[in-house]
Image 1 (cartoon, rainbow, N blue to C red):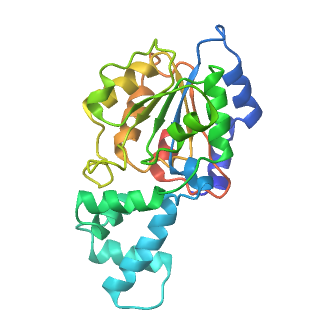
Image 2: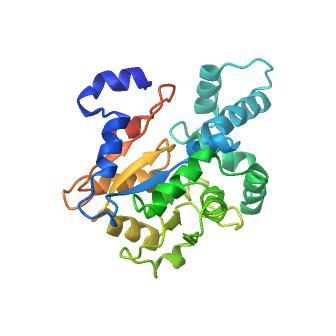
Length: 271
């Protein structure tokens, strides 16, 4: 679904940027945030890192031409070809993971590719602002699906604060919701390790500690989502679960969408 159609269907739920600023800034206790952040690949695009959508476009064309033997390319035709002839591995609902796994067989190959993608990239001005917002206690917890280190690098460049970075499920046990130190929770791992979660099987569900911590924090905080398309079930299933009861996300969930975004069916359903 495109942005215009989504706006027509959900106009009663649409909020402006000014609304969101007001919600973030209105706090009963100025040292306690009302929201956590969830950042996707779109947050790193201005730092020169290609988004999942960018990579899908490249991979789909390359793989389609290889498998079909044709030199011309049309997106719709390519998708139909892959669905019809390669449904044993191709997933239209999660193209990124299925194409990534087809193109790179092994975890260390996928890690090396990601490492090449993020190498020598610097945090954009947006990350500098985020560090400032964190310093002023508007946020203290950031979840990210990204493999890069741009956010933690921004803390080192633009502040004296050193965040807690959790890139492994086991490292989340010691994280306390009451800690005022900024927390960066990498939902899909870190590019320095082979166990990054990128394939269809790996993104089916979050690991236990990660899932439990996301649920625990959602009892106190609302959630603001930026640059994330909602293409993997691991996160979407947890968010859908949280929205079924008023015990969680009491301050709401706000999903930032750009006018040129394509909204996948799962996200449309959730909204």
